[in-house]
Length: 126
Image (cartoon, rainbow, N blue to C red; front, side, top):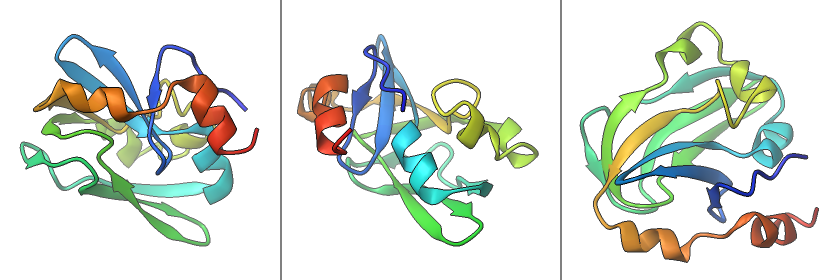
């Protein structure tokens, strides 16, 4: 499994790539492996300001549907529209082309509550 050191991780298996006051969010390599083949990603929160732990969308795999949670609070600025036609990108490249949303942080201090790669790796028992 892949645990990029430049990301922050939530207990709910989302990752955040911090770029100034904005962040890119997706699900971890561990999460996509647990879900299996992803067939659909739904994000209907464009333009909304959401609190930490709020649901920003869902991901549907062959056998299950799972909520997607905000690892930190923020305003949803962009969603990855390429996932409409290529949801399997989440399986093949969860930290690259499989990203889900971009947000503007409402409280960047919440990032301090997320795990680094080492802590997340321990969290999932890898």
